[in-house]
Length: 202
Image (tube, rainbow, N blue to C red; front, side, top):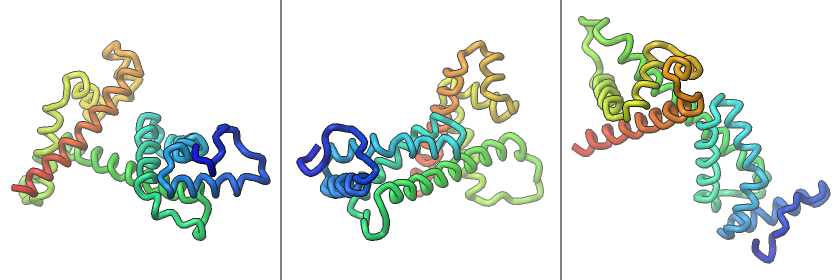
C-alpha cells in the first residue's frame, strides 16, 4: 500500500475508523492499486451480501460485486468526501447495480415468456417493430447457445422447473445446472445486445 495507507490489512480500532477510511479514499482517488485492494477487502463482503440478498443468486451477486468495484475504480474521481463516507458511496453504487441487474433479469424473462406463450395468440394485432426484433433476436440467441445451456434454460422457462428439478431430471450436479443457467443467460443478453447493435448499425 502507499506510504499514506496502512499495509497490514488489519482492521483499525473504532476510534480510527474514520481516519482509516479517509486514507483509503485518498488512495483510491490517487489511483493507488494497493489502496483499491484494501477498499475491496474492506467492503467486498458487504457488497456481495447486499447483492445476494436482493438477487437471491450467488452467481449474479458475483457479477454485481465485480461491476460495483469496477465502477468505483473507473469513477473514483467522482467520489466527494464532503458528500459522505466512502462506504456509503460504495453502497450507493451497489444499489444502482442491483437495480440494473433486476431490470435486466426482468427483461430477459419477459422476452422468453413472450416467445414461449404469446406467439400467435394475437393474430389481428400488428406487433411493434421493436417487439418483433426482440423475439427474433431471442430465438436466434437461444439457437446459438451450447446444447447444455439451451436445454437448461428451456426447461427452466418453458417447463417452469426449478434448478433442483432440472438437476434431478438430467442427472447433472446442481452446481453445473446453476453454471449453465448463469452462462446461458449472459450469452442471451450479449446475443440480444449484439443483435440490436448490428441492426442499429445497418
